[in-house]
Image 1 (cartoon, helix red, strand yellow):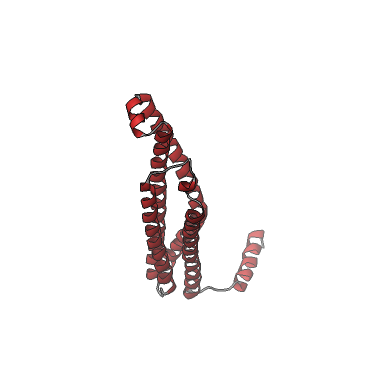
Image 2 (cartoon, one colour):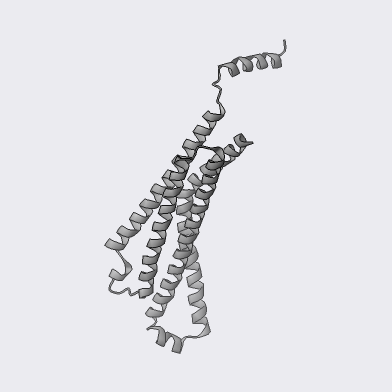
Length: 205
């Protein structure tokens, strides 16, 4: 008997000792993992909102005497809080949907909706951060140069070019920072959901 036959027999013995997982067992494991990931997405979004609210209560740029920002930013901030609350509601609904799903097809659809909601949430936050950054940078730059009327009356092409370049670079840095945070917070959970989705597709076939 050669070494290959010995290895085959040894593997067959070990294979008999391994636990056999049924269709229901695999589905239950994937359901539990998916439900846990979506639950953590919901918790993280709640912590994110709480942090933003506490930050605005205890510190806001408008508290600084030498730092004056346009009222538009306050209105945008209030509007963003309402949108974030809406997304948190969506995350909760996604979690409840997964928790009550009893079929592979239903779980697949729930995972797709959960991942789509997270993507929309991230896009919204990054877009909002970019808009806030551009408005703030331009406004502060103009204020430091004596106000809008004085700036426009004495500004040259290079001045507009400087403010444009600075705004773009600063906004890119800010968006990159938030993108890195979201990659750490939501990226791992999104990859888990994607992996679960692939495994569910296999057992569905």
